Image 1 (cartoon, rainbow, N blue to C red):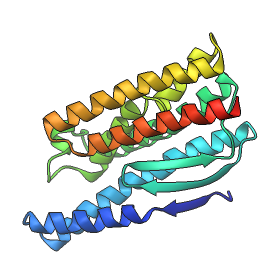
Image 2: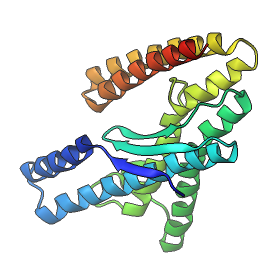
Image 3: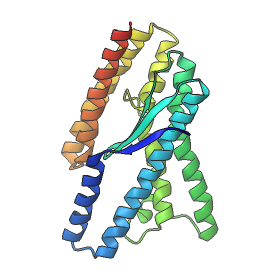
Image 4: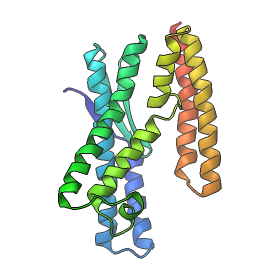
Length: 219
């Protein structure tokens, strides 16, 4: 569709680092490669998620400049942000709807092969890969729809606020909520040893502030 797709160099570093970590933990090379394969499959779903945003934006006449994959996820860079709340709402939810569709398709496939595994069973080393991907996509839906601006849920929040107040005020309010959520992410991650959460928190915090600056500059 003419959308450039890039992989940031840090993503490749992450893959190499994880492979070394898996082998260091005592996994065989084959098992380590399977782990990397699962991660690539997850990020393949993330690419489809970002394309969902891009294709919905195109429906409203907003081109997508490119999509870049980072270790913490993907970013679709739109030529401009929608100013109508209705447009922002549908562009924001399009990505999670793609993940929901993938999860639904995987559920149907795994159901044909036998009773689908529960979350705990699927996430064990001997779990079904397709079921594992199904649960990961459902997790992506829940995580992305958290009201942490500028994540998808945060953009839905701004769209809702913008129907009742000035766009700049709605952006500032959603940004403050997003920064508060980022702070909670960081604290929870540090207390529970989930080291990726503080990284995501920093990204959300900085992106929320940057979005506010862009809106103020346009105004």
